[in-house]
Image 1 (cartoon, rainbow, N blue to C red):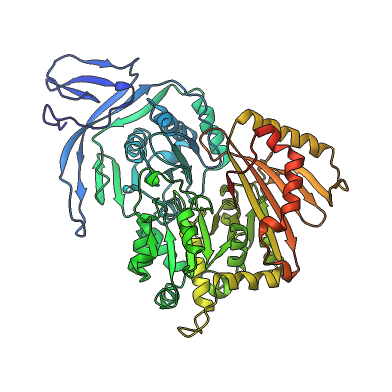
Image 2: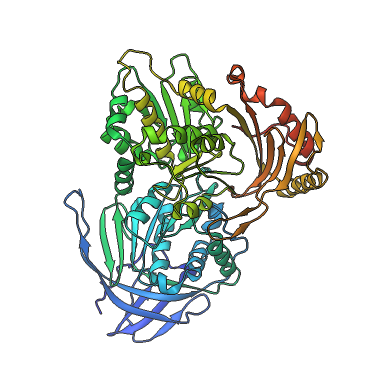
Length: 636
Protein backbone atom coordinates (compact mmCIF):
# COMPACT_ATOMS: atom_id res chain seq x y z
CA UNK A 1 0.00 0.00 0.00
CA UNK A 2 1.16 3.51 -0.75
CA UNK A 3 0.13 5.85 2.05
CA UNK A 4 -0.17 9.62 1.78
CA UNK A 5 1.97 11.87 3.92
CA UNK A 6 0.50 12.13 7.44
CA UNK A 7 -1.42 15.35 7.87
CA UNK A 8 -2.39 15.63 4.19
CA UNK A 9 -6.15 15.48 3.71
CA UNK A 10 -7.06 13.02 0.92
CA UNK A 11 -10.35 14.62 -0.03
CA UNK A 12 -11.93 18.06 0.04
CA UNK A 13 -15.47 16.76 -0.34
CA UNK A 14 -16.58 15.08 2.91
CA UNK A 15 -17.96 11.60 2.58
CA UNK A 16 -21.73 11.60 3.29
CA UNK A 17 -22.89 10.98 6.87
CA UNK A 18 -19.47 12.26 8.12
CA UNK A 19 -18.01 8.78 7.80
CA UNK A 20 -14.82 8.27 9.77
CA UNK A 21 -13.09 4.98 9.13
CA UNK A 22 -9.89 3.91 10.83
CA UNK A 23 -7.79 0.86 10.08
CA UNK A 24 -4.34 -0.17 11.28
CA UNK A 25 -1.97 -0.56 8.37
CA UNK A 26 1.77 -0.78 9.02
CA UNK A 27 1.36 1.05 12.32
CA UNK A 28 -0.37 3.96 10.58
CA UNK A 29 -4.08 4.67 10.97
CA UNK A 30 -5.79 5.87 7.81
CA UNK A 31 -8.84 8.10 8.32
CA UNK A 32 -10.99 8.32 5.22
CA UNK A 33 -13.32 11.32 5.15
CA UNK A 34 -11.65 12.96 8.17
CA UNK A 35 -9.38 15.98 8.08
CA UNK A 36 -6.09 14.35 9.10
CA UNK A 37 -4.13 11.14 9.54
CA UNK A 38 -3.25 9.86 13.03
CA UNK A 39 -0.88 7.16 14.29
CA UNK A 40 -2.55 4.29 16.08
CA UNK A 41 -2.47 0.53 16.38
CA UNK A 42 -6.20 0.15 16.82
CA UNK A 43 -8.76 -0.86 14.25
CA UNK A 44 -12.27 0.53 14.26
CA UNK A 45 -15.10 1.80 12.10
CA UNK A 46 -16.98 4.89 13.22
CA UNK A 47 -19.98 6.16 11.30
CA UNK A 48 -23.28 7.86 12.05
CA UNK A 49 -24.73 4.38 12.37
CA UNK A 50 -22.28 1.73 11.20
CA UNK A 51 -20.30 0.80 8.14
CA UNK A 52 -21.22 -2.70 7.11
CA UNK A 53 -18.32 -3.25 4.76
CA UNK A 54 -15.23 -1.44 3.60
CA UNK A 55 -12.18 -2.09 1.50
CA UNK A 56 -8.97 -0.13 1.35
CA UNK A 57 -6.33 -0.11 -1.32
CA UNK A 58 -3.40 2.11 -2.13
CA UNK A 59 -4.31 3.67 -5.46
CA UNK A 60 -2.07 5.63 -7.69
CA UNK A 61 -3.13 8.59 -9.84
CA UNK A 62 -1.47 8.51 -13.23
CA UNK A 63 -1.82 11.54 -15.48
CA UNK A 64 -1.78 11.74 -19.25
CA UNK A 65 -1.09 15.38 -20.00
CA UNK A 66 -1.98 17.17 -23.21
CA UNK A 67 0.53 19.31 -25.09
CA UNK A 68 -2.29 21.82 -25.65
CA UNK A 69 -2.84 22.32 -21.93
CA UNK A 70 -1.48 25.38 -20.22
CA UNK A 71 -1.30 23.52 -16.91
CA UNK A 72 -0.75 19.90 -16.00
CA UNK A 73 -1.39 17.69 -13.05
CA UNK A 74 1.17 16.05 -10.86
CA UNK A 75 1.45 12.31 -10.35
CA UNK A 76 0.63 11.41 -6.76
CA UNK A 77 -0.35 8.51 -4.59
CA UNK A 78 -3.74 8.44 -2.89
CA UNK A 79 -5.27 5.94 -0.51
CA UNK A 80 -8.84 5.16 -1.52
CA UNK A 81 -11.65 3.33 0.25
CA UNK A 82 -14.94 1.94 -1.00
CA UNK A 83 -17.40 2.07 1.85
CA UNK A 84 -21.02 1.18 2.43
CA UNK A 85 -22.69 4.27 3.85
CA UNK A 86 -25.89 3.88 5.90
CA UNK A 87 -28.69 6.17 4.74
CA UNK A 88 -32.44 6.63 4.93
CA UNK A 89 -34.96 7.44 2.18
CA UNK A 90 -36.16 10.91 1.31
CA UNK A 91 -39.76 11.39 0.24
CA UNK A 92 -40.62 12.79 -3.16
CA UNK A 93 -37.70 11.58 -5.29
CA UNK A 94 -40.06 10.71 -8.14
CA UNK A 95 -38.18 10.96 -11.44
CA UNK A 96 -40.19 12.53 -14.26
CA UNK A 97 -39.75 12.93 -18.01
CA UNK A 98 -36.84 15.32 -17.43
CA UNK A 99 -35.28 13.67 -14.39
CA UNK A 100 -35.50 14.78 -10.78
CA UNK A 101 -35.89 18.50 -10.10
CA UNK A 102 -36.07 20.22 -6.74
CA UNK A 103 -34.79 23.37 -5.09
CA UNK A 104 -31.00 23.44 -4.85
CA UNK A 105 -30.97 23.42 -1.06
CA UNK A 106 -33.02 20.21 -1.14
CA UNK A 107 -30.32 18.46 -3.17
CA UNK A 108 -27.69 19.85 -0.81
CA UNK A 109 -29.19 17.95 2.12
CA UNK A 110 -27.07 15.15 3.53
CA UNK A 111 -27.10 12.18 1.14
CA UNK A 112 -30.05 13.52 -0.91
CA UNK A 113 -28.15 13.48 -4.21
CA UNK A 114 -26.09 10.40 -3.32
CA UNK A 115 -29.30 8.50 -2.51
CA UNK A 116 -30.75 9.20 -5.95
CA UNK A 117 -27.53 8.33 -7.79
CA UNK A 118 -27.23 5.07 -5.84
CA UNK A 119 -30.84 4.25 -6.70
CA UNK A 120 -30.08 4.88 -10.37
CA UNK A 121 -27.18 2.43 -10.24
CA UNK A 122 -29.36 -0.08 -8.37
CA UNK A 123 -31.96 0.19 -11.16
CA UNK A 124 -29.47 -0.52 -13.95
CA UNK A 125 -28.54 -4.12 -14.86
CA UNK A 126 -25.52 -4.84 -12.70
CA UNK A 127 -23.77 -6.93 -15.34
CA UNK A 128 -23.96 -3.93 -17.71
CA UNK A 129 -22.97 -1.34 -15.12
CA UNK A 130 -19.81 -3.15 -14.00
CA UNK A 131 -16.84 -1.96 -16.03
CA UNK A 132 -18.91 0.58 -17.95
CA UNK A 133 -18.06 4.07 -19.21
CA UNK A 134 -20.31 6.97 -18.22
CA UNK A 135 -20.55 10.63 -19.24
CA UNK A 136 -21.06 13.45 -16.74
CA UNK A 137 -21.70 17.17 -17.14
CA UNK A 138 -24.26 19.88 -16.82
CA UNK A 139 -25.44 23.38 -17.51
CA UNK A 140 -23.02 25.20 -15.19
CA UNK A 141 -25.58 26.09 -12.55
CA UNK A 142 -24.90 26.50 -8.84
CA UNK A 143 -23.90 23.25 -7.03
CA UNK A 144 -22.91 21.39 -10.22
CA UNK A 145 -19.20 21.25 -9.43
CA UNK A 146 -19.77 19.92 -5.91
CA UNK A 147 -22.39 17.48 -7.17
CA UNK A 148 -20.00 16.17 -9.82
CA UNK A 149 -17.52 15.07 -7.13
CA UNK A 150 -20.26 13.19 -5.24
CA UNK A 151 -21.45 11.49 -8.44
CA UNK A 152 -17.90 10.42 -9.36
CA UNK A 153 -17.43 8.75 -5.98
CA UNK A 154 -20.75 6.93 -6.07
CA UNK A 155 -19.98 5.80 -9.65
CA UNK A 156 -16.61 4.42 -8.55
CA UNK A 157 -18.25 2.67 -5.61
CA UNK A 158 -20.68 0.91 -7.93
CA UNK A 159 -18.20 -0.57 -10.37
CA UNK A 160 -18.20 2.05 -13.13
CA UNK A 161 -14.80 1.87 -14.81
CA UNK A 162 -14.53 5.30 -16.43
CA UNK A 163 -16.34 8.65 -16.38
CA UNK A 164 -15.93 11.27 -19.10
CA UNK A 165 -16.57 14.69 -17.53
CA UNK A 166 -16.95 17.96 -19.39
CA UNK A 167 -14.32 20.53 -18.44
CA UNK A 168 -15.51 22.51 -15.40
CA UNK A 169 -18.44 20.03 -15.24
CA UNK A 170 -19.89 21.80 -18.32
CA UNK A 171 -21.77 19.75 -20.90
CA UNK A 172 -24.88 21.00 -22.67
CA UNK A 173 -27.65 18.40 -22.80
CA UNK A 174 -27.42 17.90 -26.60
CA UNK A 175 -23.62 17.78 -26.35
CA UNK A 176 -23.90 15.11 -23.63
CA UNK A 177 -26.04 13.03 -25.97
CA UNK A 178 -23.44 13.52 -28.71
CA UNK A 179 -20.56 12.47 -26.42
CA UNK A 180 -22.45 9.37 -25.22
CA UNK A 181 -22.94 8.30 -28.83
CA UNK A 182 -19.49 9.28 -30.13
CA UNK A 183 -17.63 7.61 -27.28
CA UNK A 184 -19.99 4.59 -27.15
CA UNK A 185 -20.60 5.19 -23.46
CA UNK A 186 -23.10 3.14 -21.45
CA UNK A 187 -24.95 6.29 -20.48
CA UNK A 188 -24.59 9.68 -18.86
CA UNK A 189 -25.72 11.81 -15.96
CA UNK A 190 -26.76 15.36 -16.80
CA UNK A 191 -26.90 17.95 -14.03
CA UNK A 192 -29.51 20.45 -15.10
CA UNK A 193 -32.91 21.91 -14.31
CA UNK A 194 -33.16 22.95 -17.96
CA UNK A 195 -34.83 26.33 -18.44
CA UNK A 196 -35.52 26.88 -14.73
CA UNK A 197 -33.62 29.55 -12.73
CA UNK A 198 -30.44 28.59 -10.88
CA UNK A 199 -28.77 29.57 -7.62
CA UNK A 200 -28.78 28.64 -3.92
CA UNK A 201 -32.53 29.29 -3.58
CA UNK A 202 -33.54 28.27 -7.09
CA UNK A 203 -33.66 24.96 -8.98
CA UNK A 204 -31.34 22.01 -9.51
CA UNK A 205 -31.87 18.76 -11.34
CA UNK A 206 -30.35 15.53 -12.56
CA UNK A 207 -31.29 12.92 -15.13
CA UNK A 208 -29.86 9.82 -16.75
CA UNK A 209 -29.48 9.25 -20.48
CA UNK A 210 -29.00 5.79 -21.94
CA UNK A 211 -26.46 4.42 -24.44
CA UNK A 212 -28.01 5.93 -27.55
CA UNK A 213 -28.02 9.28 -25.78
CA UNK A 214 -31.75 9.32 -25.07
CA UNK A 215 -33.44 10.14 -21.71
CA UNK A 216 -34.07 7.07 -19.59
CA UNK A 217 -37.33 5.25 -20.36
CA UNK A 218 -40.13 5.11 -17.81
CA UNK A 219 -39.22 1.52 -16.95
CA UNK A 220 -35.92 2.80 -15.50
CA UNK A 221 -37.28 5.99 -13.93
CA UNK A 222 -40.01 3.96 -12.21
CA UNK A 223 -37.41 1.55 -10.84
CA UNK A 224 -35.29 4.45 -9.60
CA UNK A 225 -38.27 5.81 -7.71
CA UNK A 226 -38.99 2.41 -6.24
CA UNK A 227 -35.47 2.16 -4.84
CA UNK A 228 -35.65 5.70 -3.41
CA UNK A 229 -38.49 4.63 -1.10
CA UNK A 230 -36.44 1.90 0.58
CA UNK A 231 -32.74 2.74 0.15
CA UNK A 232 -30.62 1.93 3.19
CA UNK A 233 -27.04 2.18 1.98
CA UNK A 234 -24.79 3.96 -0.52
CA UNK A 235 -21.68 2.41 -2.03
CA UNK A 236 -19.10 5.16 -2.31
CA UNK A 237 -15.39 5.42 -3.01
CA UNK A 238 -13.31 7.89 -1.04
CA UNK A 239 -10.61 9.70 -2.98
CA UNK A 240 -9.33 13.18 -3.51
CA UNK A 241 -11.53 15.54 -5.51
CA UNK A 242 -10.66 15.55 -9.20
CA UNK A 243 -9.54 18.84 -10.73
CA UNK A 244 -12.20 19.36 -13.40
CA UNK A 245 -10.63 22.55 -14.72
CA UNK A 246 -7.85 20.74 -16.61
CA UNK A 247 -8.21 18.38 -19.58
CA UNK A 248 -6.69 14.95 -19.05
CA UNK A 249 -7.10 11.65 -17.22
CA UNK A 250 -6.89 10.79 -13.54
CA UNK A 251 -6.72 7.10 -12.65
CA UNK A 252 -7.55 5.70 -9.24
CA UNK A 253 -6.43 2.10 -9.58
CA UNK A 254 -9.10 0.66 -11.93
CA UNK A 255 -11.34 3.76 -11.96
CA UNK A 256 -10.61 6.56 -14.40
CA UNK A 257 -11.90 10.12 -14.71
CA UNK A 258 -11.19 11.85 -18.00
CA UNK A 259 -11.89 15.58 -18.28
CA UNK A 260 -12.87 16.28 -21.89
CA UNK A 261 -13.48 19.28 -24.11
CA UNK A 262 -17.26 19.82 -23.90
CA UNK A 263 -17.40 21.24 -27.44
CA UNK A 264 -15.28 18.86 -29.55
CA UNK A 265 -17.54 15.84 -30.20
CA UNK A 266 -20.63 18.01 -30.51
CA UNK A 267 -19.02 20.42 -32.99
CA UNK A 268 -17.68 17.54 -35.08
CA UNK A 269 -21.20 16.13 -35.34
CA UNK A 270 -22.75 19.47 -36.30
CA UNK A 271 -20.16 19.83 -39.05
CA UNK A 272 -21.39 16.52 -40.48
CA UNK A 273 -25.01 17.71 -40.42
CA UNK A 274 -24.84 21.23 -41.85
CA UNK A 275 -23.16 23.04 -44.74
CA UNK A 276 -20.76 25.09 -42.63
CA UNK A 277 -19.14 26.73 -45.65
CA UNK A 278 -22.50 27.95 -46.90
CA UNK A 279 -23.44 29.28 -43.45
CA UNK A 280 -20.04 30.92 -43.21
CA UNK A 281 -20.69 32.77 -46.47
CA UNK A 282 -23.99 34.10 -45.07
CA UNK A 283 -22.40 35.32 -41.85
CA UNK A 284 -19.67 37.06 -43.87
CA UNK A 285 -22.18 39.22 -45.77
CA UNK A 286 -22.20 42.92 -44.91
CA UNK A 287 -25.99 43.01 -45.41
CA UNK A 288 -26.63 40.23 -42.89
CA UNK A 289 -26.53 40.52 -39.12
CA UNK A 290 -27.60 38.39 -36.18
CA UNK A 291 -27.86 38.28 -32.40
CA UNK A 292 -27.53 35.10 -30.36
CA UNK A 293 -28.55 35.30 -26.70
CA UNK A 294 -27.06 32.52 -24.56
CA UNK A 295 -28.94 33.91 -21.54
CA UNK A 296 -25.76 33.48 -19.41
CA UNK A 297 -26.37 29.74 -19.68
CA UNK A 298 -24.45 26.75 -21.00
CA UNK A 299 -24.47 27.62 -24.73
CA UNK A 300 -22.25 30.55 -23.83
CA UNK A 301 -19.46 27.96 -23.64
CA UNK A 302 -20.31 26.82 -27.21
CA UNK A 303 -21.25 30.05 -28.98
CA UNK A 304 -17.79 31.48 -29.57
CA UNK A 305 -16.11 28.18 -30.59
CA UNK A 306 -18.91 27.42 -33.07
CA UNK A 307 -20.17 30.74 -34.40
CA UNK A 308 -16.98 32.82 -34.19
CA UNK A 309 -13.98 30.48 -34.29
CA UNK A 310 -15.38 28.09 -36.93
CA UNK A 311 -18.09 30.04 -38.77
CA UNK A 312 -16.31 33.38 -38.67
CA UNK A 313 -19.04 35.51 -37.10
CA UNK A 314 -17.90 38.62 -35.22
CA UNK A 315 -18.14 38.36 -31.45
CA UNK A 316 -20.58 41.28 -31.53
CA UNK A 317 -23.18 38.78 -32.81
CA UNK A 318 -23.13 37.11 -29.37
CA UNK A 319 -24.34 38.43 -26.04
CA UNK A 320 -24.98 37.12 -22.54
CA UNK A 321 -22.49 34.45 -23.53
CA UNK A 322 -20.58 34.08 -20.25
CA UNK A 323 -22.16 31.19 -18.30
CA UNK A 324 -23.10 32.11 -14.74
CA UNK A 325 -24.04 29.78 -11.89
CA UNK A 326 -27.24 31.77 -11.34
CA UNK A 327 -27.70 32.77 -15.01
CA UNK A 328 -26.99 36.35 -13.89
CA UNK A 329 -30.22 36.30 -11.91
CA UNK A 330 -32.27 35.59 -15.03
CA UNK A 331 -34.73 32.92 -16.06
CA UNK A 332 -32.98 31.04 -18.89
CA UNK A 333 -36.12 30.16 -20.83
CA UNK A 334 -35.96 31.36 -24.46
CA UNK A 335 -39.41 32.81 -24.95
CA UNK A 336 -40.90 36.23 -25.59
CA UNK A 337 -41.18 36.95 -21.86
CA UNK A 338 -37.86 35.86 -20.41
CA UNK A 339 -35.59 36.61 -23.41
CA UNK A 340 -36.72 40.22 -23.21
CA UNK A 341 -33.31 41.69 -24.10
CA UNK A 342 -33.22 39.77 -27.38
CA UNK A 343 -36.87 40.55 -28.09
CA UNK A 344 -36.19 44.28 -27.62
CA UNK A 345 -33.32 44.10 -30.12
CA UNK A 346 -35.32 42.13 -32.69
CA UNK A 347 -38.45 44.29 -32.45
CA UNK A 348 -36.64 47.60 -32.87
CA UNK A 349 -36.37 49.95 -35.83
CA UNK A 350 -32.83 48.77 -36.58
CA UNK A 351 -33.34 45.07 -35.87
CA UNK A 352 -30.78 42.51 -37.07
CA UNK A 353 -31.66 40.07 -39.85
CA UNK A 354 -31.78 37.06 -37.55
CA UNK A 355 -32.08 36.46 -33.83
CA UNK A 356 -31.96 33.38 -31.64
CA UNK A 357 -31.77 32.34 -28.00
CA UNK A 358 -31.13 29.12 -26.13
CA UNK A 359 -31.98 27.95 -22.63
CA UNK A 360 -30.23 26.82 -19.46
CA UNK A 361 -28.93 23.48 -20.72
CA UNK A 362 -28.87 24.27 -24.44
CA UNK A 363 -31.66 22.03 -25.67
CA UNK A 364 -34.30 24.70 -26.39
CA UNK A 365 -34.31 27.55 -28.85
CA UNK A 366 -36.24 30.59 -30.00
CA UNK A 367 -36.08 31.91 -33.56
CA UNK A 368 -36.77 35.53 -34.51
CA UNK A 369 -36.51 37.62 -37.64
CA UNK A 370 -36.58 41.36 -38.09
CA UNK A 371 -39.73 42.24 -36.10
CA UNK A 372 -40.99 38.68 -36.57
CA UNK A 373 -41.44 35.68 -34.25
CA UNK A 374 -41.44 32.04 -35.38
CA UNK A 375 -43.44 29.76 -33.09
CA UNK A 376 -41.70 26.48 -32.20
CA UNK A 377 -44.54 24.58 -33.91
CA UNK A 378 -43.96 26.49 -37.13
CA UNK A 379 -40.19 26.25 -36.80
CA UNK A 380 -40.05 22.44 -36.88
CA UNK A 381 -42.53 22.36 -39.79
CA UNK A 382 -40.53 24.88 -41.80
CA UNK A 383 -37.25 23.07 -41.16
CA UNK A 384 -38.81 19.75 -42.21
CA UNK A 385 -40.18 21.27 -45.42
CA UNK A 386 -36.74 22.64 -46.44
CA UNK A 387 -34.40 20.04 -44.96
CA UNK A 388 -33.88 17.73 -47.95
CA UNK A 389 -32.96 20.63 -50.24
CA UNK A 390 -30.96 22.75 -47.78
CA UNK A 391 -29.30 20.56 -45.15
CA UNK A 392 -26.72 17.95 -46.28
CA UNK A 393 -27.58 15.47 -43.51
CA UNK A 394 -31.08 15.03 -45.00
CA UNK A 395 -30.13 15.06 -48.68
CA UNK A 396 -30.82 11.33 -49.03
CA UNK A 397 -34.34 11.68 -47.63
CA UNK A 398 -36.35 12.01 -44.44
CA UNK A 399 -37.50 8.84 -42.66
CA UNK A 400 -40.47 10.32 -40.82
CA UNK A 401 -41.65 13.26 -38.72
CA UNK A 402 -43.01 13.52 -35.18
CA UNK A 403 -44.36 16.07 -32.75
CA UNK A 404 -45.60 16.10 -29.19
CA UNK A 405 -49.38 16.07 -28.87
CA UNK A 406 -49.73 19.73 -27.76
CA UNK A 407 -47.59 20.92 -30.70
CA UNK A 408 -49.60 22.29 -33.61
CA UNK A 409 -50.45 20.15 -36.63
CA UNK A 410 -48.36 22.33 -38.95
CA UNK A 411 -45.85 19.47 -39.12
CA UNK A 412 -48.62 17.04 -40.08
CA UNK A 413 -49.38 19.09 -43.18
CA UNK A 414 -45.75 18.90 -44.26
CA UNK A 415 -45.68 15.14 -43.67
CA UNK A 416 -48.88 14.60 -45.64
CA UNK A 417 -47.63 16.58 -48.62
CA UNK A 418 -44.26 14.81 -48.60
CA UNK A 419 -45.82 11.36 -48.15
CA UNK A 420 -44.10 10.81 -44.79
CA UNK A 421 -45.30 9.09 -41.64
CA UNK A 422 -46.20 11.49 -38.83
CA UNK A 423 -46.22 10.45 -35.17
CA UNK A 424 -48.05 12.23 -32.36
CA UNK A 425 -46.42 11.46 -29.00
CA UNK A 426 -46.71 12.57 -25.37
CA UNK A 427 -44.53 15.44 -24.22
CA UNK A 428 -41.01 14.18 -23.48
CA UNK A 429 -38.11 13.61 -25.85
CA UNK A 430 -37.70 9.98 -24.81
CA UNK A 431 -40.79 9.10 -26.85
CA UNK A 432 -39.00 10.27 -30.00
CA UNK A 433 -35.92 8.20 -29.16
CA UNK A 434 -37.64 4.84 -29.72
CA UNK A 435 -38.83 5.96 -33.16
CA UNK A 436 -35.36 7.20 -34.08
CA UNK A 437 -33.65 4.01 -32.94
CA UNK A 438 -36.14 2.04 -35.07
CA UNK A 439 -35.24 4.12 -38.13
CA UNK A 440 -38.70 5.68 -38.41
CA UNK A 441 -37.96 9.30 -37.49
CA UNK A 442 -35.65 12.05 -38.73
CA UNK A 443 -37.01 15.42 -37.54
CA UNK A 444 -39.23 16.21 -34.56
CA UNK A 445 -40.27 18.98 -32.25
CA UNK A 446 -42.22 20.21 -29.28
CA UNK A 447 -44.10 23.46 -28.89
CA UNK A 448 -42.05 24.11 -25.74
CA UNK A 449 -39.18 25.48 -27.88
CA UNK A 450 -37.63 22.06 -28.46
CA UNK A 451 -36.53 21.07 -31.97
CA UNK A 452 -34.18 18.34 -33.13
CA UNK A 453 -33.32 15.37 -35.28
CA UNK A 454 -31.88 11.86 -35.15
CA UNK A 455 -28.24 13.04 -35.11
CA UNK A 456 -28.59 12.74 -31.32
CA UNK A 457 -31.39 11.71 -28.96
CA UNK A 458 -32.15 15.06 -27.34
CA UNK A 459 -33.69 18.29 -28.54
CA UNK A 460 -30.94 20.63 -29.65
CA UNK A 461 -31.01 24.41 -29.46
CA UNK A 462 -27.88 25.15 -31.48
CA UNK A 463 -28.94 22.55 -34.07
CA UNK A 464 -32.20 24.45 -34.65
CA UNK A 465 -30.36 27.77 -34.92
CA UNK A 466 -27.90 26.32 -37.43
CA UNK A 467 -30.79 24.78 -39.37
CA UNK A 468 -32.34 28.22 -39.81
CA UNK A 469 -28.99 29.74 -40.78
CA UNK A 470 -28.47 26.91 -43.28
CA UNK A 471 -31.92 27.55 -44.79
CA UNK A 472 -31.34 31.30 -45.01
CA UNK A 473 -27.90 30.75 -46.53
CA UNK A 474 -29.34 28.38 -49.13
CA UNK A 475 -32.20 30.72 -50.07
CA UNK A 476 -29.81 33.68 -50.39
CA UNK A 477 -26.83 32.05 -52.08
CA UNK A 478 -27.77 33.57 -55.45
CA UNK A 479 -28.75 36.95 -54.01
CA UNK A 480 -25.94 39.49 -54.64
CA UNK A 481 -24.68 41.40 -51.63
CA UNK A 482 -26.84 44.46 -51.26
CA UNK A 483 -29.76 42.76 -53.01
CA UNK A 484 -33.08 41.90 -51.37
CA UNK A 485 -32.36 39.15 -48.87
CA UNK A 486 -34.85 36.38 -48.31
CA UNK A 487 -35.76 37.00 -44.67
CA UNK A 488 -37.12 34.90 -41.82
CA UNK A 489 -40.53 36.46 -42.44
CA UNK A 490 -40.31 35.69 -46.16
CA UNK A 491 -39.67 32.01 -45.43
CA UNK A 492 -42.65 31.93 -43.06
CA UNK A 493 -45.05 33.60 -45.49
CA UNK A 494 -43.94 31.29 -48.31
CA UNK A 495 -44.51 28.27 -46.08
CA UNK A 496 -47.99 29.39 -45.02
CA UNK A 497 -48.94 30.14 -48.62
CA UNK A 498 -48.12 26.53 -49.50
CA UNK A 499 -49.38 24.70 -46.40
CA UNK A 500 -51.79 27.12 -44.70
CA UNK A 501 -51.21 28.57 -41.24
CA UNK A 502 -51.84 26.80 -37.97
CA UNK A 503 -52.38 29.67 -35.57
CA UNK A 504 -51.02 28.54 -32.22
CA UNK A 505 -50.52 29.93 -28.73
CA UNK A 506 -49.64 28.60 -25.30
CA UNK A 507 -50.62 30.17 -22.00
CA UNK A 508 -48.47 29.27 -18.98
CA UNK A 509 -49.79 29.86 -15.48
CA UNK A 510 -46.65 29.26 -13.43
CA UNK A 511 -46.37 28.56 -9.71
CA UNK A 512 -50.03 27.70 -9.13
CA UNK A 513 -50.99 25.94 -5.93
CA UNK A 514 -51.08 22.26 -6.74
CA UNK A 515 -54.38 21.36 -5.09
CA UNK A 516 -56.56 23.96 -6.91
CA UNK A 517 -54.78 23.17 -10.18
CA UNK A 518 -55.54 19.47 -9.78
CA UNK A 519 -59.14 20.33 -8.92
CA UNK A 520 -59.44 22.33 -12.13
CA UNK A 521 -58.14 19.38 -14.15
CA UNK A 522 -60.66 17.08 -12.48
CA UNK A 523 -63.43 19.54 -13.35
CA UNK A 524 -62.33 19.59 -17.00
CA UNK A 525 -62.52 15.78 -17.02
CA UNK A 526 -66.11 16.04 -15.81
CA UNK A 527 -66.89 18.42 -18.66
CA UNK A 528 -65.29 16.03 -21.16
CA UNK A 529 -67.50 13.18 -19.91
CA UNK A 530 -70.50 15.22 -21.02
CA UNK A 531 -69.09 16.03 -24.48
CA UNK A 532 -69.55 13.10 -26.88
CA UNK A 533 -68.74 13.69 -30.57
CA UNK A 534 -71.22 16.12 -32.09
CA UNK A 535 -71.60 18.23 -28.93
CA UNK A 536 -71.80 21.94 -29.67
CA UNK A 537 -69.46 24.23 -27.74
CA UNK A 538 -70.12 27.78 -28.88
CA UNK A 539 -69.44 27.93 -32.62
CA UNK A 540 -67.48 24.66 -32.51
CA UNK A 541 -68.53 21.01 -32.79
CA UNK A 542 -66.68 18.41 -30.74
CA UNK A 543 -64.88 15.63 -32.59
CA UNK A 544 -62.79 14.33 -29.66
CA UNK A 545 -62.82 15.14 -25.93
CA UNK A 546 -60.39 12.90 -24.09
CA UNK A 547 -57.28 12.48 -21.97
CA UNK A 548 -54.55 11.73 -24.51
CA UNK A 549 -53.13 8.20 -24.37
CA UNK A 550 -50.19 6.86 -26.38
CA UNK A 551 -49.15 3.34 -27.23
CA UNK A 552 -45.54 3.23 -28.37
CA UNK A 553 -45.45 1.59 -31.82
CA UNK A 554 -41.99 0.18 -31.12
CA UNK A 555 -42.12 -1.37 -27.65
CA UNK A 556 -45.88 -1.37 -26.97
CA UNK A 557 -45.57 0.66 -23.76
CA UNK A 558 -48.59 2.79 -22.87
CA UNK A 559 -48.50 6.37 -21.56
CA UNK A 560 -51.79 7.62 -20.09
CA UNK A 561 -53.14 10.96 -18.84
CA UNK A 562 -50.99 13.02 -21.18
CA UNK A 563 -53.29 16.02 -21.63
CA UNK A 564 -56.98 16.90 -21.71
CA UNK A 565 -57.96 17.54 -25.35
CA UNK A 566 -60.95 19.19 -26.95
CA UNK A 567 -60.59 18.64 -30.71
CA UNK A 568 -63.24 20.12 -33.01
CA UNK A 569 -64.48 19.08 -36.43
CA UNK A 570 -62.67 21.96 -38.18
CA UNK A 571 -59.33 20.88 -36.70
CA UNK A 572 -59.31 23.58 -34.04
CA UNK A 573 -58.50 22.45 -30.53
CA UNK A 574 -57.53 23.44 -27.02
CA UNK A 575 -55.62 21.34 -24.48
CA UNK A 576 -54.91 21.52 -20.75
CA UNK A 577 -51.85 20.00 -19.08
CA UNK A 578 -50.08 20.23 -15.74
CA UNK A 579 -46.37 20.54 -16.37
CA UNK A 580 -43.85 18.51 -14.41
CA UNK A 581 -40.73 20.53 -15.30
CA UNK A 582 -40.76 22.86 -12.30
CA UNK A 583 -39.32 22.16 -8.86
CA UNK A 584 -42.33 23.31 -6.84
CA UNK A 585 -46.02 24.11 -7.25
CA UNK A 586 -47.76 23.47 -10.55
CA UNK A 587 -47.72 25.07 -13.97
CA UNK A 588 -51.04 24.96 -15.79
CA UNK A 589 -50.56 25.03 -19.54
CA UNK A 590 -53.28 25.88 -22.03
CA UNK A 591 -52.63 25.21 -25.73
CA UNK A 592 -54.84 26.73 -28.44
CA UNK A 593 -54.72 25.99 -32.17
CA UNK A 594 -56.78 26.90 -35.23
CA UNK A 595 -56.04 26.28 -38.90
CA UNK A 596 -56.43 29.03 -41.49
CA UNK A 597 -56.11 28.45 -45.23
CA UNK A 598 -57.01 31.99 -46.35
CA UNK A 599 -53.71 33.73 -47.22
CA UNK A 600 -55.25 37.14 -46.59
CA UNK A 601 -55.51 36.21 -42.90
CA UNK A 602 -52.04 34.72 -42.48
CA UNK A 603 -50.62 38.01 -41.24
CA UNK A 604 -53.06 38.31 -38.33
CA UNK A 605 -51.73 38.43 -34.79
CA UNK A 606 -52.20 34.97 -33.27
CA UNK A 607 -53.95 36.36 -30.19
CA UNK A 608 -56.52 38.05 -32.42
CA UNK A 609 -57.06 35.01 -34.65
CA UNK A 610 -57.39 32.70 -31.64
CA UNK A 611 -59.39 35.06 -29.41
CA UNK A 612 -62.78 33.28 -29.56
CA UNK A 613 -61.20 29.86 -28.97
CA UNK A 614 -59.11 31.16 -26.04
CA UNK A 615 -62.23 32.57 -24.41
CA UNK A 616 -64.07 29.28 -24.88
CA UNK A 617 -61.19 27.35 -23.27
CA UNK A 618 -61.05 29.65 -20.24
CA UNK A 619 -64.83 29.54 -19.80
CA UNK A 620 -64.88 25.74 -20.13
CA UNK A 621 -62.17 25.20 -17.52
CA UNK A 622 -63.14 27.92 -15.02
CA UNK A 623 -59.39 28.44 -14.71
CA UNK A 624 -59.61 31.81 -12.96
CA UNK A 625 -62.18 30.50 -10.49
CA UNK A 626 -60.00 27.53 -9.52
CA UNK A 627 -56.52 29.09 -9.59
CA UNK A 628 -57.22 32.75 -8.95
CA UNK A 629 -55.15 33.65 -12.00
CA UNK A 630 -56.53 36.35 -14.26
CA UNK A 631 -53.55 36.46 -16.61
CA UNK A 632 -50.94 33.92 -17.71
CA UNK A 633 -47.33 34.28 -16.61
CA UNK A 634 -46.06 33.63 -20.14
CA UNK A 635 -47.78 33.77 -23.52
CA UNK A 636 -46.10 32.03 -26.44
